[in-house]
Image (cartoon, rainbow, N blue to C red; front, top):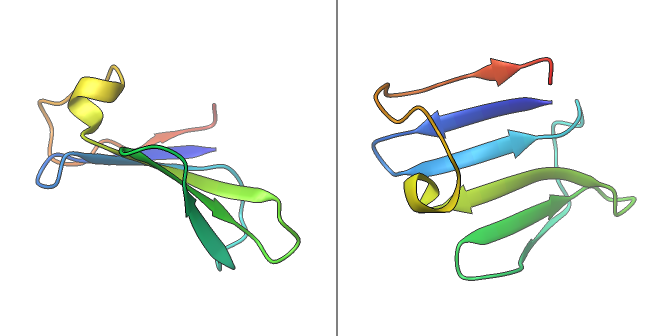
Length: 68
């Protein structure tokens, strides 16, 4: 798993596996989108307005968190 945060657009992306190409994305709420592979496994989750929706160290421009 790898989590990245971009302060410029206040969005976080949680990459759950190494599948690099997603097949379809689905909006599950106003601020959360889920990316699926062609076999419908979840490959990533995008959180918009991340500073209000998840606890993040928002003092840096991009924060990679790996190996969770």
